[in-house]
Image (tube, rainbow, N blue to C red):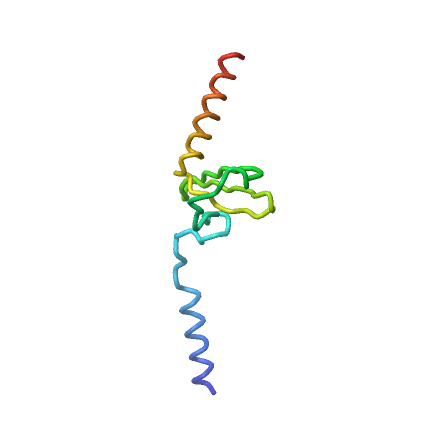
Length: 98
């Protein structure tokens, strides 16, 4: 019985003295929302677009469909690239007017 107690104390001492890693734990906040993307999605199916840019993830586009389902859209789709260019130009023009 003394051997078992000694073994438990030895294990607890080792666990207590092991240095904690300096790496950050992976939290749900730091994970990328989009793990896969849709490459073809007609614009008519989309109710709204949401853009997410986080330091550890690439540019992400989430489309909320008319069926209330959310899908990740490939940001390289041609119509989406044109949509973003038009939105940026519109913002630049509105800043010049003000």
